[in-house]
Amino acid sequence: MAAGKNVAGKLGCYRKIEMRVGKMSKVILTGDRPTGKLHVGHYVGSLRRRVELQDSGEYEKIFIMIADAQALTDNADNPEKVRQNIVEVALDYMACGLDPAKSTLLIQSQVPELCELSFYYMNLVTVSRLQRNPTVKAEIQMRNFEASIPVGFFTYPISQAADITAFQATTVPVGEDQMPMLEQTREIVHKFNSVYGETLVEPQILLPDNEACMRLPGIDGKSKMSKSLGNCIYLSEEPDEIRKKVMSMFTDPNHLRVEDPGSLEGNTVFTYLDAFCEDGHFERYLPEYANLDELKEHYKRGGLGDVKVKKFLNQVLQEELEPIRNRRKELQKDIPYVFEVLKKGSEEAEKTAAKTLDAVRAAMKIDYFSDGELLKEQTEKYKGA
Image (cartoon, rainbow, N blue to C red; front, side, top):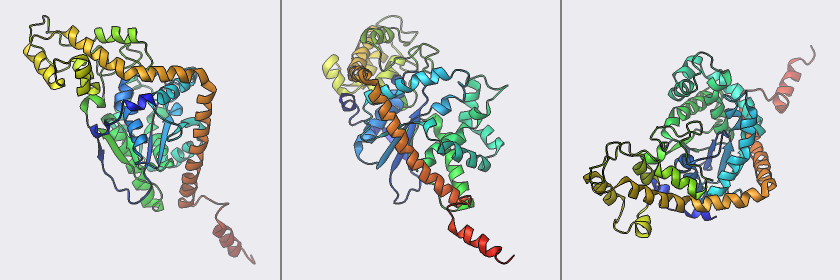
């Protein structure tokens, strides 16, 4: 796909934290909550990487999940918001280059085995452990849930563990803020395997190595990019809207004149250039500089205006986002196809999850009707009674 072309060669900016995997199949599980269209923060933080991993041929299975059940944990009173964004997220996925022929795209709620696994895992985690999870604490504070926390939201690290283990994922690409969630999953896996025998797969973490890719700020310089704050650049936005947003970006507030020295720290424009810019962009759009380091040095010593840098960033983003936007428009013409992709992917995912659930039930000795030995044992026990 055209969009996939733009991500080639960028896998090198990600690093693995290795865990014990053995000789098992290499499987990826990752996904997003369907609470709105996806933006450039999602793109550099995960989507671009997923396409690269998909096309690498290194993984036997890749599951990309639209986490609608998780989205409902803090949107229970607004299910229509979640419902309407299922297709939006799927369109963004495929527009970025996720290929249904190579990756399994699924909807979380359509795999009921995940709920049952979550229920069993709840017995392996204490309330105090969930309360200590830094990601959960931060999310609770961000949503003002301190006084009244929905149980579903509080326990979503357990649900996430069910998602990961159900598909026997060996690798989970995440941002640094999600590391505590993966640690919780590994704890659950270790506890289950210790109590019931080796059954579940312990995953690896795949982290971005480029700091700018870990958490792209909003265009206003705030650390969080969100629809509610109005500080996003969406993958599907038109060129004029992208340009307007780039030209309004937060820079160095003390860089008042062109000749003034500028600061890179907290400068949103340069953070975006760190995430998107390549040396080839200078050859095409700003040939007086060889690379981003030269541009930064000029800005720091003075003599380079913000407008010129913003215009360059606009050209870089337009080049990156145009094929994604065009591909999305083509996909929008055939929504039944998008639904069919999600339906088939969910069915395929359920088959995998069902196998894991069977193994979990057997390990926990609750596979009463499929364990022939139990029937034989009980029959012998009461023979002649």
